[in-house]
Amino acid sequence: MEVGIIGAGSLGLLYSYYLSINQSVTLYTNKAVQANLINEKGITVQRDNNLFHMNMNANDSREYKEQFLIITVKQYQLEEIIEKLKDQPSKTILFLQNGMGHIRFMPEISHHRILFGVSEHGALKLNETTVKHTGIGMTKIAFYDRQKIDSEIINTLINNEHSLFMFKLFTEWEPILKEKLVVNATINSLTSVLKVKNGELISDPYFKKLLYELFLEVIDVLNERDVDGLWLHVVKICENTAGNVSSMYKDVKEGRQTEIDSILGYLIDHAYGKNIPYMRFLYYAVKGIENENNLGRV
Amino acid sequence: MEVGIIGAGSLGLLYSYYLSINQSVTLYTNKAVQANLINEKGITVQRDNNLFHMNMNANDSREYKEQFLIITVKQYQLEEIIEKLKDQPSKTILFLQNGMGHIRFMPEISHHRILFGVSEHGALKLNETTVKHTGIGMTKIAFYDRQKIDSEIINTLINNEHSLFMFKLFTEWEPILKEKLVVNATINSLTSVLKVKNGELISDPYFKKLLYELFLEVIDVLNERDVDGLWLHVVKICENTAGNVSSMYKDVKEGRQTEIDSILGYLIDHAYGKNIPYMRFLYYAVKGIENENNLGRV
Image 1: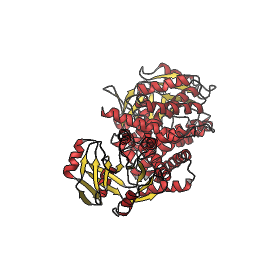
Image 2: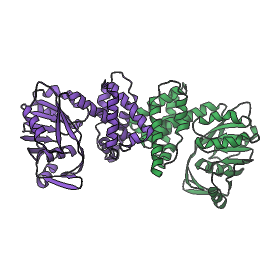
Image 3: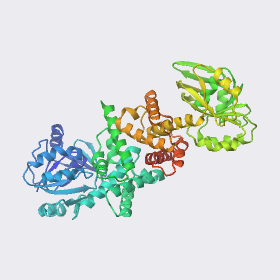
Image 4: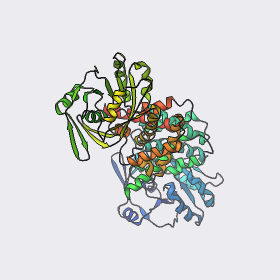
């Protein structure tokens, strides 16, 4: 199977490496210089203390020719890609964005078969061709429209992959994306503003109180009923990633744009008058911190 | 006039220096080692790029003999001093604490003549005997009980002091303390959590929005009507101290206990069901940050 992977950040490099073990992968980068480096050096994955290497075809074109595309760019980089996909013949496309902001684009590309996915892998980009696989997870996927299923690609993904890089198919996409959104909206935004590691949100009783109250706002906006189950999930993630810096806090630290708009911004847009003061506080705080970072860089 | 100044932090050192130009001052420190240093080296004030020096009597006793006492310790260090003052013969005592948490002690020491004061000076303690006078302000004072006025001390303070260290007497104490409380509750708590300098709260539009919404909560709890006037005051303070780190953010940075309980804690205790989510968020955030600092030091 020919696979096109769009975006060569940490997830793009990771998926390119693991999928190219059994498939023919082309990696689409944003800039020519990164594509050249990847063509020259291949991709290196660091896992535990071992290095794994794979040659890779990369290019910075916007002509995605493969029948199966995996889009790993951040939500705020998606618009340009959506424009391209509008004019392309029907493909199967897996979206791996955080939040739910990208759902709104789907009617514009409804001639494709769309999969939504959530990646549970931990990945840290070390340089333009090297990624550290910091946590083994799975990729949960589900079709956006259950009338339009691509069984061949599903069978290839599920039956034919690496034991440390499993795909699992779900029937409903909303629960998967919402579960991840709850985690991102609580852990990521709070750690970015308090500037703490994930574990501190539950080891400190005051931070845990903030986490829980914020969690209740998020659950309320999403109309989620399984409050206890989702709370245990959030706490579990804090435990399992206690020593980690969340991806949003990492963005803040490195002066990059964050995904706050597709996470808290999305929820605030869908709150419809519900009481969400902590979400609003954190949204404005992160937007301000992004601004400050930009000013600092000029 | 004999003056006892209790507490040898930045304000204690500053007031000791300026008052001892014309009065006989004894400075009461918490620890003997600091008292010994002050007796040996005197007090040095750095203002602009000049150094000013004064010999000083200091000791760490709790027997405050002077007729006029100025208490400069933090609110959370006050309880022990109040206990001592209960048994002392009637004096005139000026309290210079932030917040309004100390008001509750007054019935226990009602045999004294009590003044409340607000210091507008900027002061930064450089070491145990040296303080930098970073901003010239005035000391606003008012008697707690207008039936019990000590004219002699007021005349001494107002007529006889240094031109860079003026005292101004007001008839009502509440407006002075509330104005300062509004400033502390907004600027100090927000800068401590966002970890920014005072000026960034108004230069960044997102932070300014947070500042204003927090300000409205504070005003509401204090039943203050002059919303526009107080907002201009808060903005003015941010402008005048744009490059400064607030005292609470400084405490956070240096791993010290903050005054959050006597500032936001006091307001939360007096909110009586009013809607104060930003105050609650910031209160728990600062309490958690204090905890983290303590854990870090063990």
